[in-house]
Amino acid sequence: MSHKTIIPIGPYHPLQEEPEFFQLHVEGEKVVGLDIVLGYNHRGIEKLSESKHFDQATFLIERICGICSTSHPFAYVNAVEDLAKIEVPERALYIRTVIAELERVHSHLLWLGLAGHFIGYNTVWMWAWKYREPVLDVMEKITGNRQNYAMMKVGGARRDIEDEDIPEIIKMADDLLPPLDMFKGAVIDDPVIHARLKGVGVLTKEDIHNFGALGPTARASGVAIDVRRDNPYGAYDRVEWDVITQEEGDVFAKAVVRILEMYESVKIIKQCFEKMPKGPIDANVKEIPPGEGIGHAEAPRGEVFHYVRSDGTNRPVRHKVRAPSYMNVPTNKVAVVGETVSDATIILAAVDPCYCCTERVAVVDRKTDKKIMNGSDLIRLSQEKTERIRKEMGVK
Amino acid sequence: MNPQKEIKEKFSNKIIEFEERAPRRIYIEVKPEDIPEIAKFAFQDVGCRIVTASGRDTPDAIEILYHFSHDASGRMITLRTLIRDKDNPQIDSIAPIIKGAEWIEREIWELLGVNFKGHPNLKRLLLADDWPEGKYPLRQDS
Image 1: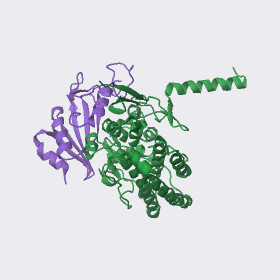
Image 2: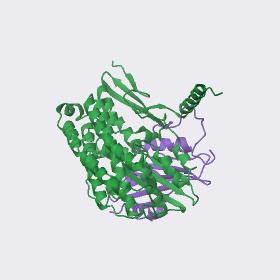
Image 3: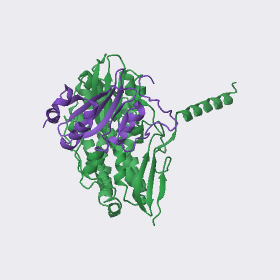
Image 4: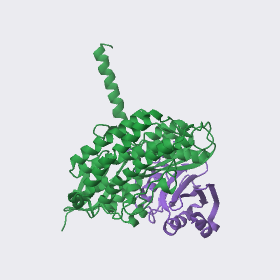
C-alpha cells in the first residue's frame, strides 16, 4: 500500500517570491495532487478604487504589482477611454508603448534569472539580472523610478520622453541584443537544460482553453493569443512585430517564448522612436460620463483586464481587475500533477506567477524580492523608528 | 466572423437586451437561468475565451457580467445578468463547463455573497479565515 505524503511549499518558502500556499500531495517521488491556497496578500484594491477619483485610481492600480506596474494602469486607462470614448493623442500612444515594452523586457529578464536560479544555473541568474539593470536605469531616467512609473494617465501620458534622452534609450535597446543572443544560446542549445525542461510541465491547447490561460503560458502551447495583436491598443498596430509561439507546451517552450519575445520588444521600441510624432501627449480629460468600459493590455504574464463603471460622478462605482496569473496559476493543477517533486518548483515558476496581481499584494523586500510584511507590520516598524529617533535626540 | 451574431441568432428569444457599445464591445443581457447554456455555447461552440466575471451590487439586484473574448476578431462579448433576490442571491455555476471559472465564481461568492449552485469547490479564496461570515466587502452597505 502506498503512503500519501504532503509536502508544503509556502507560505513563506525561500524559492517563492511571494506568499502562497501550494500543497503538493505526493506518493513517493510523484506528485499526485495539488491544492492552492491564496489570500495572504489580498488588499481590497477594487473596493479602494471606488473611493478614488478616476485620476487617483491610476496611482492605486499601478501598485497592484511591482513588475506589471505598467500593464495594470495601461489596461485601466484603456477601460476609461473605452467608456468615455476618449481619443488619445498619437504621441502618447507611442510613449505608452515604449514604457510597456521596456517593462516586458525587464520582467522577462527577471524571470529568466529566477528560472536559472531554480534549476541551479546561478550564472544565468546573475547575468540576466545584470543585463536587466540598464533597462531599469533607462526607466529611472524617463520616469524617475525603477518600478511604478506613473506614466499612464486617462487621456494620455503623464510625462513626455525628452528628445535628448532618446539616443541613449535606443542605444540601450541595441545593446540588449548581444546578451539576448547569449541567453538564447545558453537556453536553446544547452543539452542539460533540454534534459531538465523539455517534456516537463506540459499544457495542451485544450488545457489552455479550459483554464483561460494567457500570455507566454498559452503561446508556448501553440495558442496564438496576444492582446497587442488581437485588440490593438497603444501603438501596437502602427509598428511591425511578431507574436511568438512554440508548440510543445512544456517549461522549455515557455522559456523560449519569453526569450524570443524580448527581441520583438526591442523591435517595437525602436520603431516607436522612429515613428513618434511631435505634439501633445494629453487629451486633458475633465469629466467621465456615465457608462461602462473594458480595457485590456498584454502584460509580460498575459492579458490584464480592467472593467470600469461610471455613474457620471468623479469616481468609479465599480472597478474590476483581473490579472493574468489568476488564470495561469490554476493550470498547475494539470501541469504539476504526475510530475516528480524535484520538478515541481520550476513548473510552478514556469507560468511566471505574480501573486501580487492575483491577490493585489502589498510589501515586497526589493533586495530579496520576498514578501515579508503586511500593513500592520509596516505601521509597527514606522512607530519603532520614531521611538529610536526620539531616544537619539533625547526628545521626550 | 461575427460571434455576437451567432449568439444573437441562436438565443434570440432569451436575449433581454443586446448592445454594441463600441465596435468591439458587445453587452448581452439575459436571465440568470439562461447563463449556463449561453456561456457554454460561447465557450464551446463559438470558441470564446473566458476572461473573467465581475459582480456588482446595485439597489435592485446583484449584477454579474461574464466577460468573454473572441480573440480571432478582437471582440469582448459580455453576458450581463441581474439577480434580483438580494437576500438569497444564487445562480448555477459554469465551473463544471469552464474550469477557468472556478476561482472567478469563488471570488464573487465571497465578496458579494452570490451562491453558485453546483460549484465543485465553493470556499474562500482571498478573504482571511477570520473574516466574519455574512459580511460581503463589495456590497454597497459594507
